[in-house]
Image (cartoon, rainbow, N blue to C red; front, side):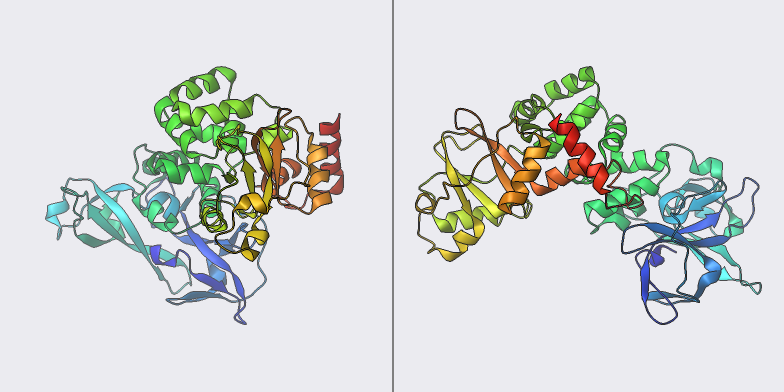
Amino acid sequence: MARLAGLVVLGPDGESVGRVRDVVVSMGVVRQQPRVLGLAVELLSRRRIFVPILRVTAIEPNAITLTTGNVSLRRFAQRPGEALVLGQVLDTHVRVTDPELEQLAGIDVVVVDLAIEQTRTRDWLVTRVAVRNQRRLGRRTAVHVVDWQNVTGLTPSALALPGQGVAQLLEQFDGQRPVEVADALRELPIKRRHEVVKALDDERLADILQELSEPEQAELLNQLGTERAADVLEEMDPDDAADLLGELGAIRAAVLLDEMDPEDSEPVRRLLQHSPDTAGGLMTPEPVVLTPDTTVAEALARVRDPDLTSALASLTFVVRPPTATPTGRYLGCVHTQRLLREPPATQVGGIIDTDLPVLSPTSSLAEVTRYFAAYNLVCAPVVDDENHLLGAVSVDDLLDHLLPNGWRSADEPVMASTQTITDKISGARQ
């Protein structure tokens, strides 16, 4: 069943329905052979739905075909007595009672896969279990395939025990975008969610947290110790870290800020001084900042940074030293399109756009919205009264505050009503 993850799901006419993200099986308290109930399928919209296994007409190496293209679009919700094979069953510790595998008798082994077969009644049942002994000296041990009846420990109570591994889950997440992993985490039971979060490295976890809502981020961050939580915050973008700290209590936020490296905590502290519904609260303190003597070639090299969002890469800001925010005197900006039209040796000081107005850190959400609409930009400078560049607001930061709560979930309506957005802008104006 592990091989089903990511397979394309096709309708009878070959039209793509989505991709398999997990397999749902029955898991009763009384020991009985698990039965496959269906598939958790992710649509192109990232919504996960349930497709009954009886709708499946063919399982092939590269795709799964359904008997009909008509499927329920109701969001998948796990029910009591159900278990997710990839999300919950794999990496479970079990015991093997197979007399032909005496070397495994009395020791814990880990489930690495399940095999299913279809019966004469068209039901799909779990018939075999692939297990592996714990790694020894960093090396993988052999995989053994045993009949289901020779395995003990595949019960709901066993799945609820703490300390379950997540190697198989992390392998499934490998290569997926942070937003896709964030969607997958939402579908996992709380226990598994916390186990995955603890196993991820700091940088990967920071990228995934930024795709969750602030309440979801806070819930997961609170499962980490203070030191680990501070390390993750250091890997987050300063504006996202500030939003997350604002969701935590003042005491918890202060403790984490003190634990962070001063170089990483300082820009976050500055952002927390501004109201979240102002340009100062929306901005990132790390836009592309250059001095006037920087060449076009050097500027283009800066905007090629793969860690930059497309919005931030659209505009570079020219200042007098220092270039770290708050910078020296702000001189103007250079559009990336202009950089592409100039000779590589040209200095950016000679092609500055000095006419573009700037935002104040106290500019309201309504003012920021009108600014982007009026000047057809996706990035805007935030400058204080003394003409120091403090940061830049990007259009994704603006949309994050304009869209309704819960917009990050694939199951929520993506388009906010006009009234919802109007209410938010009006609230900011007031």
